[in-house]
Amino acid sequence: MDWECDLYIYDAGEFISVNVAGRRRKFDETWPRMKTNATIDEQFAIWQAQHDWLKAHEDEKEWIDLNTVTPEFAGEGYDIADPDEVADLLVRMRDAGLRFPDGLIEEFREQEQK
Image 1 (cartoon, rainbow, N blue to C red):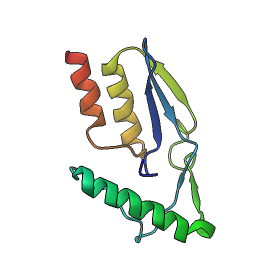
Image 2 (cartoon, rainbow, N blue to C red; image 1 turned 45 degrees about the vertical axis):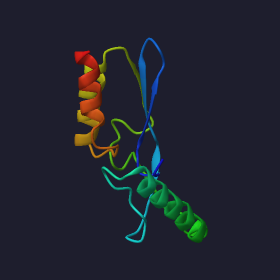
Image 3 (cartoon, one colour; image 1 turned 90 degrees about the horizontal axis):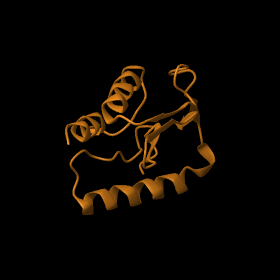
Image 4 (cartoon, rainbow, N blue to C red; image 1 turned 180 degrees about the vertical axis):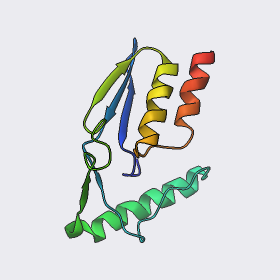
């Protein structure tokens, strides 16, 4: 968890549940960002730095209402059986300004091919 993803995605067995947060925490330039392709040790160090940052900035919570970013998706949930349809939804969500890890769309496209 890096507090920057706008989605919660679960494999519910017969379908994939994609849920969009209603808001996201606003971070400044001092927020330790997770790196793509970081090693496990690097990820842990960044995660620890994020926890330390959150403690140090506990009283400075600012939120971005995702309705201001994408009213179409903010706070919505989708249950979809087909991984390719999930990928299509994620493309639309990314294009609308939602944040989620790089590679997620490709991961669902690969599931469809299996």
